[in-house]
Image (cartoon, rainbow, N blue to C red; front, side, top):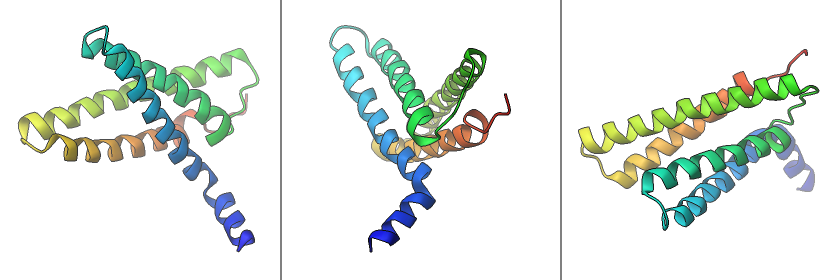
Length: 138
């Protein structure tokens, strides 16, 4: 049984790690939003929460999900810029899905948000796997 679990972990490590750290990233986002929402308008609290959670996601994805090696400051800067850029893209997709689903189609906001988060998590996984943390020759 132990060998089977070890084989499953080795086979799906990056996906499972991504889901674990994605959950923690969501938790960071909610906690930061909750704190700042007491002092500032919700849109500012949401923006700060997005930034801090994306920074948390970058660090955890780099170190533990994709085990990315960046030997120079230049490669770190390229990788980080790419990560934040794609996350910004997914932020706008997130907002678009919510506006279309809730405001235009009059869907239940919680169901739309659930569908939205599944799509955004999948997009972020593919962005990270295919474009951001890909193996680099330099």
